[in-house]
Amino acid sequence: MRILGLDYGDRNIGVAVSDSLGWTAQGKGVIRETDLHVILAEIKEYIKKYDIQEIVIGLPFNMDGSRGPRAEKTQAFINFLKNNLDLPMHSWDERLTTKQAENVLLSADMSRAKRKKVIDKMAAALILQSYLDAKS
Image 1 (spheres, one colour):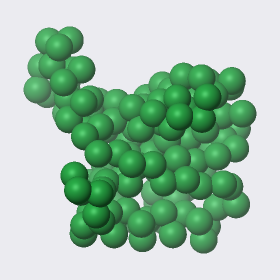
Image 2 (image 1 turned 45 degrees about the horizontal axis):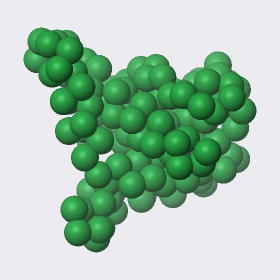
Image 3 (image 1 turned 90 degrees about the horizontal axis):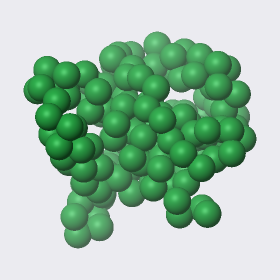
Image 4 (image 1 turned 180 degrees about the vertical axis):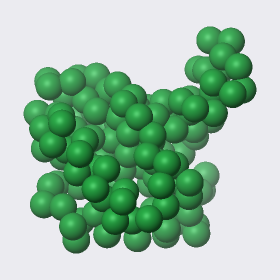
């Protein structure tokens, strides 16, 4: 059973997919779109391509655990997906995942330009991996 992980942002959505056993997450791409219907179509392509059975979406809580404007925008996106997809959906605390992804890429001595291209899918993979680890 494969799970799709999403890191929702204003301009980009990082995408990750679990292996078929649900043990590991791999970054698969970035959706660079703002139109919700185009985003939905691209997510449906991932669902079809990888036979996705479940979706995990990072929810950006504030450091004190409260929900700010970014979390509210993400929740609206989650609600949109729930209304348009017939799959189980879970939100997952994503505090510091983008910073964690950036640290991994910096330690790999990756240039700023290359980091910018992969940071979102790396963050999606970290969100999904955290979810998978908590399930096992």
